[in-house]
Amino acid sequence: DTAVSQTPKYLVTQMGNDKSIKCEQNLGHDTMYWYKQDSKKFLKIMFSYNNKELIINETVPNRFSPKSPDKAHLNLHINSLELGDSAVYFCASSQGSLIGYTFGSGTRLTVV
Amino acid sequence: AQSVAQPEDQVNVAEGNPLTVKCTYSVSGNPYLFWYVQYPNRGLQFLLKYITGDNLVKGSYGFEAEFNKSQTSFHLKKPSALVSDSALYFCAVRDGGGNNRLAFGKGNQVVVIP
Image: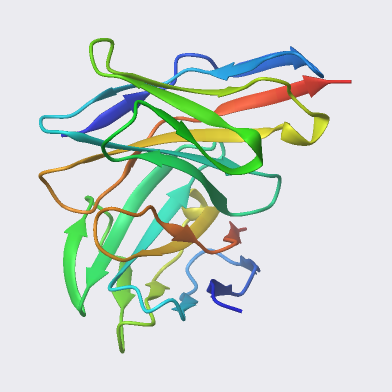
């Protein structure tokens, strides 16, 4: 199936830990994104990568680092997790500007 | 920077009645407008978009939206709501002359009452 897939779907971890969320798209899109959805359902863009180049970084703490080994993957690594990092993280991809994004199903991160 | 406003928090509608979810936008150039739907514990699904052309666009699941440039609005509509339409709806806008970034509204919870 053509899709944007994220793993894991759920992640529960303790404060101070380091964790990664993986994202892969097989749509051939040239840009990938990470969004954070908070408890009030607000969606905020965190990063986007186009052809392996970071083009947006929306004042995200440097504990968050995107890693893109190739244009089909954009992983999110988080250092020293904090309680406030608890949220649902969505990966998305797009091709060009005339179509919308295709979203993954999300990763629910809970920091305890 | 581009932005959208979805003024209502929740929209309640009886099954079979018309459904409208409001969205107004702000961009410096020509707007590219989108609607997405999010079902519980799921990712966002694309419903429809306006890039250019006819102001009335039709999308998935019987939804449509009307682009109104003078009112800077892009309201989502469905003539007859179903209980299964209960979900969270997001309006999004991209500046046609800028980058690919989509700015999302805060979302509207739609509750269709049987």
